[in-house]
Image (cartoon, rainbow, N blue to C red; front, top):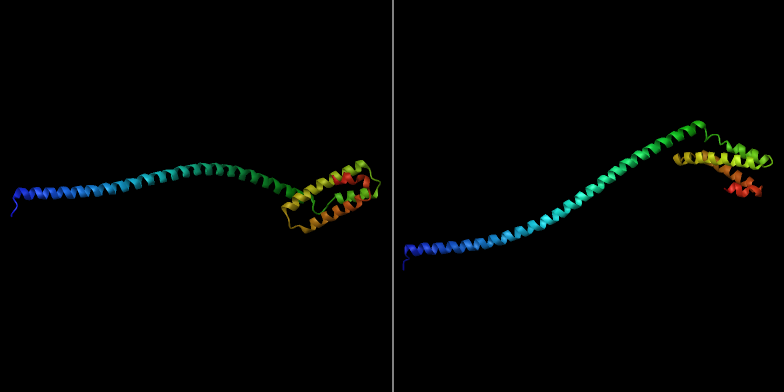
Length: 169
């Protein structure tokens, strides 16, 4: 039984229709998977972009603050270096003048004005020595000399209880 030419065309068209429908269903499935991936990827990438833009803003602000702080610290360092140079020129590490004042104070009858003067001079000198020592931790000779004078001051102050609390300030 031979098919008529019209029937052959109809069968061919029906087969083409079935194949087209099958391909359309496959294409629809692939399209849905692709769109799902695109939407998910777009959300993830969008969130990452938003987070990165926020981080850029925060880091830019941090960089500006750090630059300002750097300038401030450089200025402070330069000032401290100048102070150290001036103190070295004055010979503060070699001549702890307040030691002479302490010796003279304990040889004479103590006077309140003299005590105040000696203490003020000792505190001023020690403050400068302390700054120098903080800047230059390795200067053992200056440290030991300052410690010896402080011990001498403490020991001699014990002989004058009247001035002990004044000395402790």
